[in-house]
Amino acid sequence: MDPALSPTLDIDELADNFSLFDDWEDRYRYIIDLGKKMDPLPEAAKVPANKVEGCMSQVWLTSEIHPPANGGEPILVFHADSDAHIVRGLLAVLLIVFSGKTPSEILAVDADAELARLELDQHISPNRRNGVASVVRIIRATAATCSTT
Image (cartoon, rainbow, N blue to C red):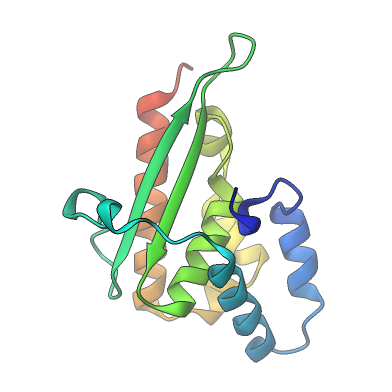
């Protein structure tokens, strides 16, 4: 499994890690490092059907649906990649927020609030915010299609 998506790193720990850095240059380096830890998507997955529109960089997003445990909801696991280091890091952050959760859990996440909690809403460009919003829309749409609630 992707080290960046390890169950030992969740949004709370990510927020705690962010708070350890005094300036945004260090936070950007941390975000880039998160992206470097992600497994790259195989070239076969970098097809138009997986490409996220609305991103300035090239971004691909795939998902896997894992069967429900004990009759519950399925678990959605997302994989992403980009040709830009900072975008890849932002994707890692989004995967920490959303991947490995049930559709209900994904749909309950307030992505804007989580990004604000990390202060990313104030420190990424409007174009990158649009790209992040596009990825979140796809993740939420995938969850909505798999939702049993």
